[in-house]
Image 1 (cartoon, rainbow, N blue to C red):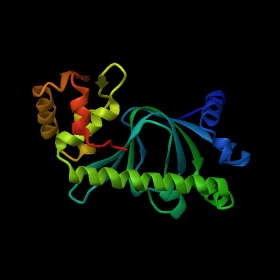
Image 2 (image 1 turned 120 degrees about the vertical axis):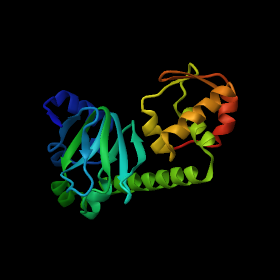
Image 3 (image 1 turned 90 degrees about the vertical axis):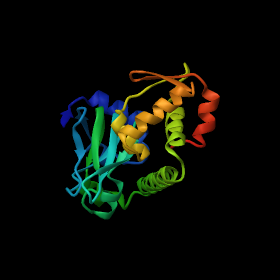
Image 4 (image 1 turned 180 degrees about the vertical axis):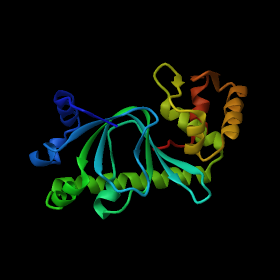
Length: 226
């Protein structure tokens, strides 16, 4: 992790995400802009939360370590979000591992100071409640979806979510990471990609997936991952 001493860039992110609407000037003055390189751990499970984070740029993933030693991918961060909500409010050790998938910027605030100040800030508390509620809803929805639908439906949903205006998808995550997120193995995921190709719904060329039949892909998707 590197601290970025660029007040102009920090101010840009604060204004872009309207952070002054939920935090007072005293807390804003304590903000630091942190830069994490691809593959670098941002939070380590079971360690103390030192900084509460606003994720502002890049891509991260949240994983949970299971008792059998395997890890399960819970969420990707690609848009503005928060990191450390439960740990901040409950003052508990970090629950999940968070890792930068791409080079990423986060705004950090010392957790111990924020705990002292946040309970007197109604706007921040409302923001936290909304953040925690959204994460609970999303995690529950995605977990249920993985249990209820075959992989071809889950993969179709994943692809539909990432399709762009030119009817193709550029995979920014490895097949292993996508497999973790969809609750399957690399091999099963690879075979399902091939099934979609054989049905002439998609065409795979390296990391680029061309959508040949968007209507059929959307029918298979059933619903979208959140």
